Every structure is written in structure tokens, then in C-alpha cells.
Length: 102
Image 1 (cartoon, rainbow, N blue to C red):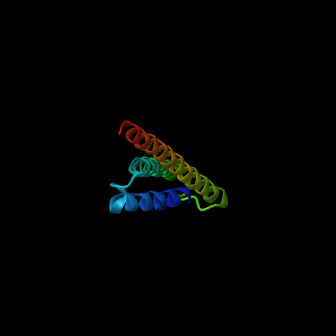
Image 2 (tube, helix red, strand yellow; image 1 turned 180 degrees about the vertical axis):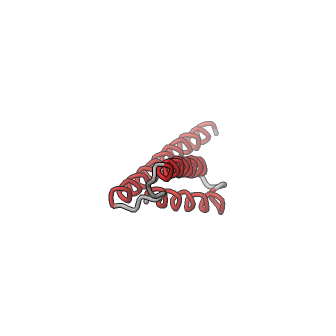
Image 3 (cartoon, rainbow, N blue to C red; image 1 turned 120 degrees about the horizontal axis):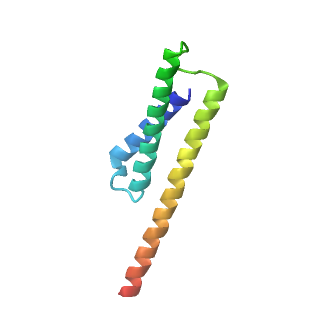
């Protein structure tokens, strides 16, 4: 379940980035977050392949796995928010420096 949730999150962040996020003020945060989600999805895909080779199903549809997916999504969104806030703070300092210079 965490693989499914992570792929959905990666897809959502990718669509946001591709359709308007490239020029937004938080483009760096969007790109970093979508790359993190895609990396996690790749990791869980490899884990799923290892599970299949071990005789288990590819997808783990359990409550614990869904909770893990929710924690990963919450962590990714928190990371996105933190990086966005840091970018806003940095942009605010650059604006105040240009105001002082003029």
C-alpha cells in the first residue's frame, strides 16, 4: 500500500511541477519533493520484486503498510513546506537587500 500511495504522491507533485511549478517561487521545493517520492517508489518497487522472489505478493495491502504510506506522505509534505518556507525567507532577505541598496 505504501508503494501505491507513494506513486500517487509522486505523480501529483510531478503534475504540479510540470504544469506551472517550474516557474513558481517554490520550484526547488517541488522538484526535490517529487524526486524524493519517486526515489521512495523505486525503492519499494525493488522491495516488491524481492518479495515476489521470496514467494510473497508484490503489494502489501495491510493497515500497517497503509500507515507507513501515510507517514511517508506526511513527511514529504512537511519537507516541501519546510523548504518552501526557507525559500520564502531567503527571497525576503534578497528583497530587503535590494531595497537597502537603492
